[in-house]
Image 1 (cartoon, rainbow, N blue to C red):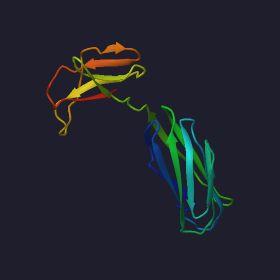
Image 2: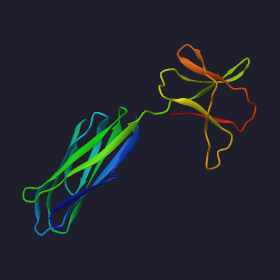
Image 3: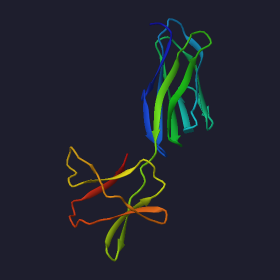
Image 4: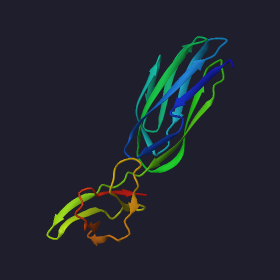
Length: 188
């Protein structure tokens, strides 16, 4: 099909707060004429910040919440690539939108649905007089302690049914097993 086309990899985005992600746009001029003044621009949802942007060929720039790449002229049958590196800042769902434009050829709006998840809080092990205790921050909504005895696939995690105690601003769970093949995690 003639005209200016664009696609992005990955087409859907799932990230964890704090994670850096790279999106790659491939821009193709399927002709029949040279595309003049080709630009790819986008607004970034507040769940992300722009860290870096590169274009080949062309020039690119960005701010915390937007980016733009000036790709110049693309003769019929040629392509360009734009890479945008982002950092996930907050949990949420939404859509990243970008627009491919040219002075003489119409281009599409390119959308990337995303979901940013909260990072699982870290478990800590404290040694007490009565034995080891797992602790984790109290502000961890939606996470539950799980246990398994075998890390060979397929791993079957089971929710720990005993309620954890509370010490200050941390949950604590006293380890009662002496089996060294017992593994714990926090999961939703």
